[in-house]
Image (tube, rainbow, N blue to C red; front, side):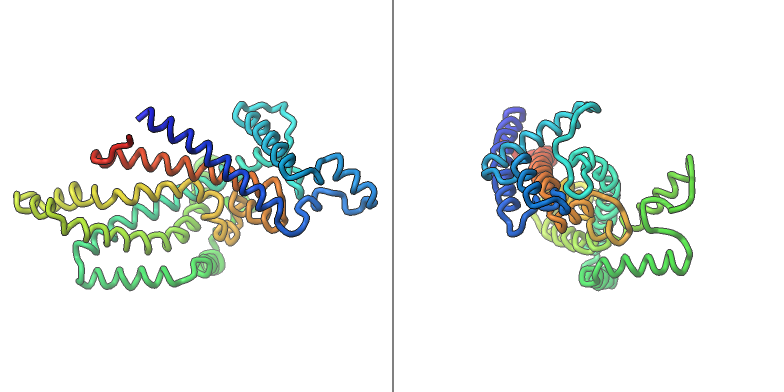
Length: 331
């Protein structure tokens, strides 16, 4: 196990180097001037040229790459060690805020929303998928199939707007933003207020995932239930709960462990639509606005960190896969 993890970490390091080079080249060589936003538009042309020369904007791409990641790892070390006296080197061209500390703050806002959405998705998907697989062809299966097709085809952003219209407009209960605006709460009331504001967008965001994942669970269960060992378990006289939930479900759930790899990188883009609709100042919305504004440092940093989280997620899912299935050997 340890030797496998060490080898994977080395491979991840090499992969990140390749990703960092490609992402930097794509952003740096894209049409337009992503550096222009960091210059004073009211300055004289001669002053602008001097600024570009002093800040290295006209340096060769290789030199820019080395300088950027030198600044990135310097700031990253300060974030990890909690160095409050550090002079941040990577700053947003629009807001002049340090990139990595701001990214961490935005991540703490988005992370609970992503986790709750994932919990709701998986909590609802498995009962629905297993139930329809055990009742294949019956009215429950047909109703669930129609409902899943409806949720898959119905635009999630439109459903979110309808919920805001009904809950906020008709019932008068605020659901937009992480907390109720203009009201000071404390203690349990503040906790309940934050939970409500997070639960509504998380539930709406999870509906589409439930529709897709429940169909996948059903397909996996039907495939596993046709295997010889399931028929053998039934022939031995085991009760249905033991056969379906101990033997069949364990093997049917193995592919879903791989899906965990997408949980961490979903912080950067998985919730951007719902963050925009529900006015959440989260990470996905922050990165999206940076892309539109060609905020170079935020875009490249987000690509690198998102890639690193993806690789970490894949490593964790591979390890969990070997734990869940003894037949899988990491070596």
